[in-house]
Every structure is written in C-alpha cells, then in structure tokens.
Length: 405
Image 1 (cartoon, rainbow, N blue to C red):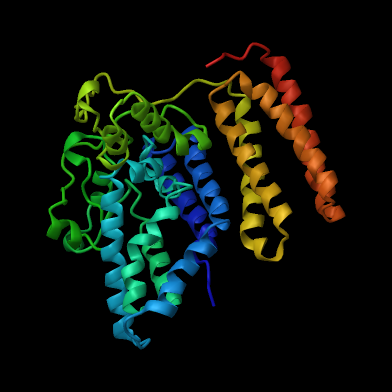
Image 2 (tube, rainbow, N blue to C red; image 1 turned 120 degrees about the vertical axis):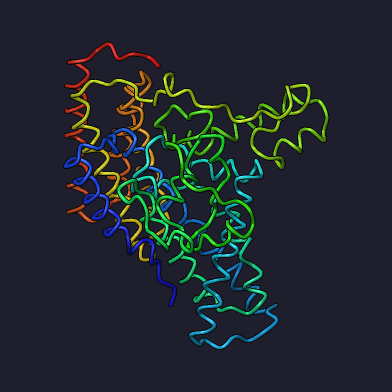
C-alpha cells in the first residue's frame, strides 16, 4: 500500500510552526515575517498540488525498472531497510549537490533557497518542478532490487527529517554534529555568504559532506537567500524566474555550444562575451536589506483569510483527490494557485492585482455553479467568494490609488 507520509504530516508541520512562532514572539527574535511566511507556505501548497499530477507516473518509473530489470531479489529484513536508508541518503546527497552545480537543475531547486528568513516555514518552500528529475538519481536502487514501497517510505522519511532542521532556535547538538545533518549545518547550506555557498548538501547524515569535501562549519552570521534576490512574493514567478534568466542568456549567445552550456554549467557561468564566470559577491552588512515592500495594514486580514481559504481548498484536494474526478481536481488546483497569487500580489500592492482579484472571485463563483458541487459545499464556497468581493470592494474604496510596482 502506497502511503503519502508527507501529506499526512502536514498537520504536525503546522503545529511545530505554531510552537516556533510562539517561541519567536516570546523571545522577540524576529525570525518570522508575515509576507515571507505566506510566500513560503504558498510554495509548499503549490508543490503538493502540482505533484498530484506527476507523482504516480514517477513512482511507476521506479516500479517498472524494479519489476523488469532488477539485478537481485532483496529480502525485506531489518538489515535491508538499514542498507536502503543509507542508499537513499547517499543518492539524495548527489541529487542535492548536482542541483547546485547544474543550471538546469538549479532552476528548479532555487525555489527552496529564495527566502531571506530561516524558520520552519522555509522547509515547506519547495519547487513545483524538482520532482520531475530528482527521482532519476535513485534509479540505481531500483536496478539493485530494493522494493518500491520500501524506497518510497524511506525517501519520504528522509524528506520529513529535513523539516525540523530549518530553525534558528537550536544552536548546536554536540557530538551529533559529526554524524547528522543538524540545524547548524543546514543554516550554512541556506547561506548566501560566498564561503557558505554549495556546502552541506546532506539529507540526514552529514558524513557525506565530510567525506566528499563539501562540509562547512557554521562560523560567521549567515545571510539567507540567493545571491540575486527574487524580490517577489508571486509563487508562480518564483518557480520560473531563473528559467527566464537562463533563456535570456542563451538568446544572447550566438554560439550553439554556449547556448547549451548555459543550461549545464554551474550557476554564475556566462559565456566569455558576457563577462565569463561571475563569483558570488561578498555581503556588505551595512548595505544589506531584505525584500520587504510596504502594503496597507488593512489588507492583512483579507490576505490571511484568502490564504486560509487556499490552504483549506488545497488540503481538501490533497486528502481526497483519489476519490475525485479529474475536472474538479484541476479546477480546485487552479483556484488554489490563483488564490496564492492573490496573496502575494496584495502583499506587494501590485496594481494589476485589483483586476486580477475581481476576475478570480468571479471565475470561482461561476465555476462553482457550473461544476455543481454538493449543495452544502457549493453554498459555503459561493458565500465566501461573495463576502470576499464585498470586502475587497471596500478595501479599494479606502485605498483607490494602489502603487504600481
């Protein structure tokens, strides 16, 4: 039986985020910002929903190789579980390391590194497209004969382990720092400081970084994010912006070989006619400033309500899509993503957001009627959208001249 352990863990994730958030307020640590946290969680919701449409196909890719081309028949003993755990962690290290060293892979993985904060919401900031290629790195395990369900279970727990290490609340873990990937080690991995870039790629065991020469101890203060800040709360643009950069660079390169190299060389590589390789710049603490656009405080309540609606809709789809028809799943996914775009746009006070929001709400009401949901759900859903329309109209009356960004 295939169990989605990550989806089942979502409630636990939010409980732990709540605990860290309470600790953050109690200690006045400023680890959280509303706009950044919503952007992080939006990526996680989008990743889970878009994953619905490809996770089964990718699982069957591993399963097909196991069933037709495996070299050995592995018994399901405790020792095989332990060996597979080590194997999953080993191949995760190489997948993760290559995701930092090949531009086309970094274009997907970069999403996880865009946040300029470091808290448990960052753990949920995941790429919508990374799953399209990450599974290929684990195929040697299928050829070796490790059962697909065992693999899926251990790869899920490898991912779940990495949730708790996205925190600044835990400083050091003593001797465990030599064996496990810890919050300290992973803070380094998320740093944009030149000395921290492309270090500590481990999943569960930090031994791989120590053995393969990519380990870096946490020393000076870590500045989080990417060297060229995203400067946007738009979840769709977050997944596409680096692809846009690569395509633009390729178009500026007359040589076919350079066009290809743009996608297979490491981040920072440019053809000689565009200046060659660009090293990550040193960070000037006096000039360093996080992306934090102003927005009217009265929008906060509206944004939070729309985000909760998106979270509820996304969760409902995630836990029941196997019993749903395809059209409602697609509609629900599109509605949820459009709602997440609304949240990001309002937190930046984009002028296009006004027409976008009215269009989104109108489309949601129309589709709810056309698709004929169960009457109870239909009434509640339409009521929420109508209340949102009235609320948003009043907000625009109070702030008719939104800044265009």
